[in-house]
Length: 237
Image 1 (spheres, one colour):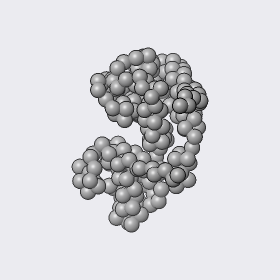
Image 2: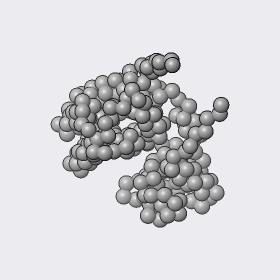
Image 3: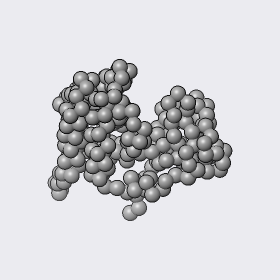
Image 4: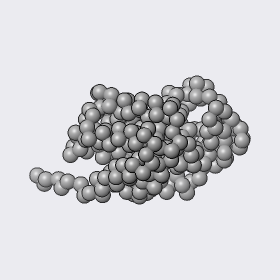
């Protein structure tokens, strides 16, 4: 049986943007219109446009310049990178995240600003919003991790993180939707996992690079172990 894989709205929006870039509508070095202009053109919301831009930034097509906008960095996507992530075993993706986010957490503890700390706390609060769907919870969790990486003020680390996001999102939604994991996210209910995220942010706010890095590594290593564990055996009827 051939399985049909449906693309997310963000994936579709990224494809449409890529087509327009490849057609020469926006040349290399050119600036893209703002989200409010692109969203109705693509038939999606502004948050979907942002995610599509993050995907293309992670693939080397776009570059976001703070305070200036989004610019075309290459006319074609780095297909090798995109295909690698789509085909990669999720454990390999988590190992990549361990390398990136551990260093990012340490740098964030050294470089974070007051606005960075505020953004991390706001993201933490959204992560435990009651009544979230699994997808909303995963997206909120990703915002927390991205806020931490952004606080490192290293554009390369941030682009790598954005490149991992679509593949990781898909895997996390699938994992949390398993019946055996039905209470894992509990849609916005605080738990031990959320406390770990709070501790990481606290270490960053306290300017403690070693602790921030150690907590991040431990958290992602535990996630890797959970993904590596064999699925529960289904009872044969």
